[in-house]
Image (cartoon, rainbow, N blue to C red):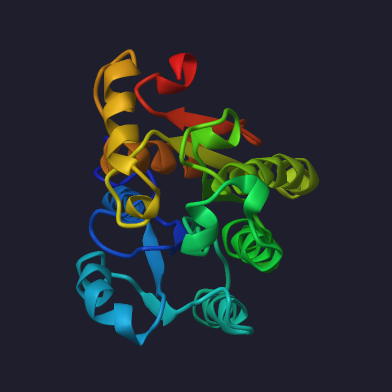
Length: 260
């Protein structure tokens, strides 16, 4: 993604990436694509235990800002945006790739999900994106882009996806409503919907290998997508070439959504 003058298509843009866990995570694939296109990055890590794994990644990506952020902890997300405001003064894009549900709720029926477990999944996986939008808005004075990560299970019932289906449906709906609300400020909002990927987060789903095999067999392209595929789409959406696009749920799944 390099322009004829040698500058990347995102040169001069600054973005925050939330959710890098390791070099196989969707957030890392997107961050690498942003950086390759010339963007400056701010990255977060979950806690001190995960910092050892993500610090080399932040260094490899040349992250200007690298801060702890557990969205379950009051004040941590606010502190990240405050640091960005102080250091950069503005922000061009945010990638939100965070999801969590308690294992006992995730592996059970939606009908049997606990109130506390459902509330936690909604807060971490959905409402944290809304909070990101609210904090990013004053930093995007010249417009910007907010991206989050969903899955086909938000639209159709996917076996063993369970409680995350309703949660991701809420996330996609939130993205559409915020696109409508923030459009006049030049802020665009999208949800990426990748096909099944071999990430550490996805491995927590019950019988996930079966989902991978089924996706590869049924998708028109008969192959699983990669984090690089997702990153390429994300880099396009935050670039100026997508300035007339907002509110979309963008599938990058080899066509699985049309047959799944």
